[in-house]
Structure formats: C-alpha cells, structure tokens
Length: 429
Ligand code: LLP
Image (cartoon, rainbow, N blue to C red; front, side, top):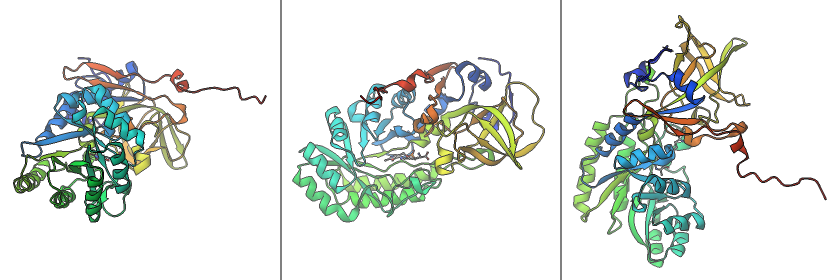
C-alpha cells in the first residue's frame, strides 16, 4: 500500500467507502496521467451481489446492462459474480463474448436494428428482443422459426431527465399492449417462438413505485401469452449522486418486499418454470468509478470564478447532456488546506461555453494543480466519452481487492487519432 501524501480536502464520501484503499489519487494521476478513470473492484462486486439477491425467487437473474460501462475488466468481474449481460449493439455483444459470457447469457435488446445487426446476433446464437411490429416482421424474415423476445411499453415511464425516460406515451421504445393481436399474428406468420417479454421504463428512479407499477403492467401483458420462459422487468435503479448533501439511497429492502410477492404470485399462477430478469446498468457500475482530473487554471470573468480543468465533456458527458450532478472532491498534491468555501464554476478544456462540469458549486477553495475527483462516474462516463476536439480518450485503472492498482485500458495516443483515416490526394487532376 502506498502512503497517501497529498491533502484530501473534502473527501468524506470516498473515505467512507475507503475508495482509494490507501492509494494516493494525486500519485495515481502522476503515474497514469490525467484525466483518469479509477474503479474500485470491491465496490463493483458488492453492487453485483446486492442486486443478485434483490428478489426472493429461485429463478431471478441480473443482466448487467453493459452500456453503462463496457470495459472488459468490468465485464469480466460482472461475469465472475454470476451476472448475465444485456447488449444494445453488435459491439456490446462482441465485448460480452470477449469477456467470457456465453451466447445464451447475453440478451440483445435491439432498437431500430438493420439486417446486419440482427444477423450478427442470430449467427452468434444471442437472443434478440424486438421493439416494434415492423422490426418483428424484419426479424421474422431473417430467422423464420427462431426464438425471439418482444419489448413492450408498459405505459409507465421514469427517469432523471426526459431524455432517459423510455416507457409511457412519449418515447420511441417498445410495443404498446394494444398491438398484442398483431404481435401474435406476426409470431404465427414467421413461426417465431416468443420465449420472453421485456421492458425498461427509464433510467434513474430513487423510489420503487414506478418500477413496481411497470412490473405489474408487464405481468398483465405476460398473461396474454402462453409458454413464456422469462420476463425481464428492466433496469433503471438509481444511485444517489448528491452524497455530499446526504441524499439517501434507493431503498432496496422495500423494493424487495414489494417485488418478491408480486413475482412469486405470478409464477404460481402462470405455471411452468418462469424466470425473471432485470437489467441494471448504473446501479452496478456508477459508484465503483471516480474520474480524476487536474486543475489547469483559476480565473475570474467578471464576478464569476472559473476553475479550468482537463475534464471536458469529451471525458464525462452527463453534466452537459442532462444537467447531471456529480459530487466533486478536491485532492491537493502539496500545500495548505483551504480555509474558506466559495462558489465556483468548474469547466473543461473543450471549445464550447457549455463545457461545464459543475455550475455555481459551493466548494472549499480550489487551487491550480489540485486534482479533482468526480464521484459516481463509473456508469455512462467512459462509455459515453468521445474524441471531440481530437482529444485521445483517457486511461482506466482498477484498484483491486488487495489494494494494488491495475491499468485496465491505456490512454489513447495522438497516433491513434489517425486510425482508419484514409488520406487521398485532394489535388484536382
Ligand atoms: N435496459 C435498457 C433497455 C436500457 O436502455 C437501459 C439504459 C438499461 C437497461 C440500463 O439502465 P440503468 O439501470 O443504467 O438506468 N446515459 C444516461 C442513461 C441512459 C440509459 C440508457 N438505457 C445517463 O448517463 O444518465
């Protein structure tokens, strides 16, 4: 274990879970560069285990929704913990297979897929969920007599922002229950066997009510089909992003108390050996990740104080895309503790004024060369990053259960910006 020599200014949240396990965040940045995604293996494993025991039912399975974080090291741990996996694209199927998931452990929840995508899944032996009548016909032509799942819209939606609500009347997702006769007709026309139905009402709810409502509605839909092997009740379980303000957690115990009797009663009524699945992404991956970045400038524009960092929205997109809040900790490689708090706006290095990580945030005074820790960045952080402004992607490291640190993805290089570029002669003639 390394000795922590930098000063942690406001690190109550990461200290409470022993996030760095004796490693010094400033030293990690020195060694692996900045910005840097840091994951904690034991927190990841703990989250996998919490959800595996969410429902008291023998055939309850957790599909990790890998869009949240599809780094191989994370996928492998989820697999080791006995989770199954969701995929939203051939790329995610490919990565899941590389991480060791078997085709039958992967569920491709497709949306507006072309023939190539569907054929990729079919050829790999991965079950596909279809979310419109037109896609069901397309799939039927490609996989006559095959197995399929259908994603329904339970008429209930939830989420932290309208962009991530995926159930209810205002979304592109799922088949509405009124089209069940058409679904049945298409299944018959193409000889498809409906082995499961699924839903996903949206991302990040902090109370179980909308989820339970969605589940009840999906079970009503399930009653209209015979011989289902599974019902997938979706993901969306939220995590508290405002821990520094004491935000409470989603009450898993109460969700368990509500869901278990509903699912058990349904299983009894429905017969067979029905399985239930859920597909959480954020709950599994968010809290095991912190994004470290460096403060490169401190300046005033008028009355506003700007903290200029290397954490642009190419690295973490959530604040810009959804006005999402991430708690921020300050680690000071050297110098004295801050003796006052002030309101600052923390920005990145991308050439857009909207490149704001935190607006008007009250924090202990931040100094140039401080390292900032952006908390709960494990989900939809790296996976939504880009190379906008031609900035190579950051590295990712994992703090292992034995406190050692492993590089799990190298920082991209400038040379990699040329990958796949084909330069032709632009001169006429
Ligand atoms: N299943 C399906 C079909 C999904 O579309 C999603 C997320 C999940 C499961 C997992 O949802 P979770 O448990 O992670 O909430 N980029 C946004 C979140 C978008 C989620 C998209 N779909 C964010 O950063 O808040």
